[in-house]
Length: 159
Image 1 (cartoon, rainbow, N blue to C red):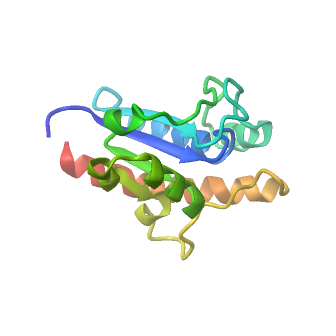
Image 2 (image 1 turned 135 degrees about the horizontal axis):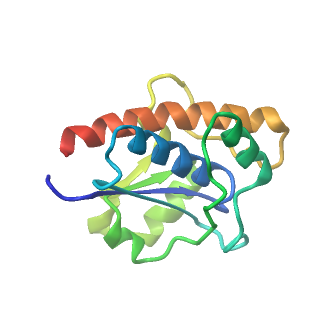
């Protein structure tokens, strides 16, 4: 490939799941010394939280595992993202459907359910922990870590 690979993580509001994936994946990429070869971002299909930092509960779980995400800010997916990113990773089927409807047919092959990159979980969706307790954020963190490791292995094969 020789060029940068770009990755966009997408959930509903871009304050829980996708920024967690962004931060976890960024840490893995940095640990492998690939930050110059892999571009990472996250976004939401909705605009409710644009400009806001990640949910405090997500930030606390990440920091408890040594991962920083306070620098991230929510933004909404826009049409240009389909041109810019090689991997557009939806956290759930609803996000995937919204992205699929937005994308031109030639960009749809970039869309993936994020958990397809994990072989540790039976689920196909990363559940939204927003309305639940703190254990939901821990579970999301574990799911995202597993899928991030699988995604990075695939990308390394292309670099």
